[in-house]
Length: 272
Length: 259
Image (cartoon, rainbow over all chains, first blue to last red; front, side, top):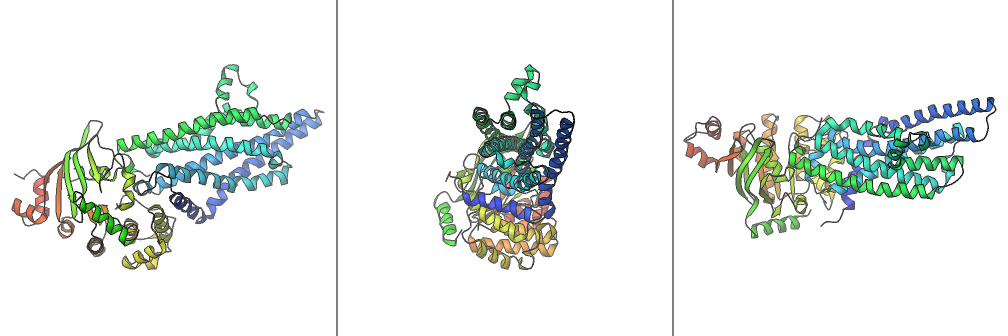
């Protein structure tokens, strides 16, 4: 009786796929923003490389400038995966369907599993075409980084799920007033995750904050790979360990906030 | 869910206490506000019972606690033998509910919505069950229309189809005919009567429509300011208060004219 039901998880995934299929603007939107970001940063990278060549600066600086587009693609993967999780959850609030789900045999962890699956599906729809565009327009082939890409993605997706779980719990407990957090929380993390610059750039008292965030390990790892051509397994393992702790904390927070919402009686008044 | 499983479940309930829903000393406070206080009742399997009371009487909070979506501050509520605060997932597949304040995803078609809920409730043959519901609730003509594009009456029929998708043994209804025209409301009541007759289901409804309650219900639990103030068959309550209709009884209680 306590086992998770693949059928119920599948029913929830079908529900979100029906929704995606019903509206081409929803699918286009998944690709649109990552593509715009990629072009903006891709042209900036081209400009920096051009300036570096004109000034006679070669090699290391130009290669370092090449990390911009890689970092952008990975940052957008983190952002899109978190939005994929949170937006699927918010769809239930916007459509006032949450009470139907919570009254059904769907268990909270089955709901979470479906949200995780949708996070991956929406990420794939958004990012895969954009990595192709990055190669076509700027000659940056993310997939040429090989297995390292898998390590980067695993860490980023785990972070996105932890944040998605925490945000969804807050919305369950506090209602739609907490919706804005879903959109903005990662931008608070961004300066400290050192997406576009090394951790050493931060003042020393802020560096411990950066190293407490799993995405920092991914972006440091990306720079090590592109600049020094070294795959830092140690960084990936450390990031993974923090991610596992974060995911456990996010899951616990979601369940505690759901229970708190049951105590507060807010689950029957869900919606906009 | 097939017929034999449903029948087995009902026999199991009848064989135990005979009460499909049991509330004991339910109390719910929200900060300093007492929403429900010392509410106790048993609802017999196979009966239809109404929770009546004015706005703020505690009906929705009581139904929320019966569904397990609201945790009582103290007291206990069980449905089909399961404590709804702790083990609701044991019986949720045998229950369902409908409320005009809850929607289904607007961009999904009626058929897609029903398929999703059939999956969630573990319905053995979703296509067959949806076809049965489409016929009995007259949904066929708009099965492939988006739920958000339906009229209020059509939406109510779809919500009822969702509520019956798993052939529930316990059906909770919050104002099932609110905002419907008299013809559609009468049609919905007939479907509920049919369902109860055929399946022997237990129905608990909250309503402000006294004629509806007189027609559908074997029993009425009257709430005021979060407490049970009276409880009995509609005809018995009318006789007890010396009135001609349940509506007059309701007004007596709501306005404090009851002895």
